Length: 425
Image 1 (cartoon, rainbow, N blue to C red):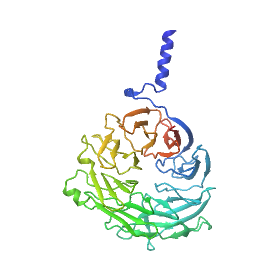
Image 2: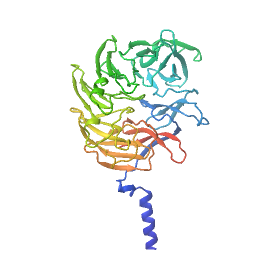
Image 3: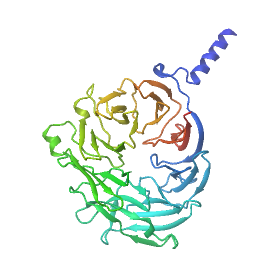
Image 4: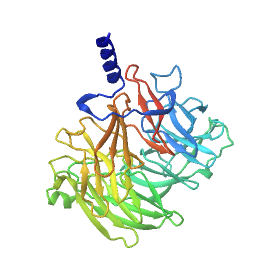
């Protein structure tokens, strides 16, 4: 009888995660709510107020390119409404402006939905100089404007501009297509597309270009524009031929298609891609450029094209990037004042690919991705706990809402992804 009891007790410990692989410290995620609603748009949910908006594959449409815009209560995860069906989502988040939620489909079309009811209110097709354009992935909303970047014209020139949503009629038949021309704010000096997700800080909007050819002998451009006057108040270039001349292993290429490399804190703009750069926004002075591929503690590849959001916390910047001789992604802590590496999780600490952004709460870093929910100490990167039963999904997006981390969890048995909230208290 004692032997049977001991076997049962050991099995219970193993099943509960007290002992897991490589003697990792155990962590058990407390699920505040699970929406149970399926989506394969892992990084496209957004929180606005007390609501979560995301692209759902509605019931009976799991395996076709059909979606709804779906609203949940961020506190409880309960369904508020589903919109009518649409297809061909442009892989960027829905954006909220006043009483409407805007969705981008195809390469040039905007749909608006009523925030309170989910009703489809308008369809607008974007045109530049009367011709077609192709939208890039990253958009941002501020006041009555939605800021976008796009390519257009015979030379496929790149532009950064904005759409005044007040020019879209919300009272017409939503099936009637309205033609809207974005207001152009910037055409970069190079032919490279504007891909950095726009960041608004003190009534100025910042963005930057991405190098599309290799070797990248053209520089990355950063620019900031006054919201009211559209005047350029910040401009910087770096990389390009200079990097090639210095034989930097991986010359600067700027952000990837959905990259978000710009972080602004206390009037300092940090730009994180192959290198970490910092500018004083009050003077325009460049404070430093730290090229990771040249002087990290061990030979590693740092790669940050797809970072969704860096975090500033207690003088440091935290982010995930590709690194390690195997090319997998790792978690890094950088001193914001110097740009120097404080610590990172080298391959022996964590062996799987990280393709999500970190969340910081109560001095701890939370990362939810395919092989589990990992918890680290912000001070030294020590692994505090792992929940291997929590399976994040793809390039998931983690959002902190009060004490909840809203993210995507995959069911390993069914392959279905659902939005969940993890209680971090």
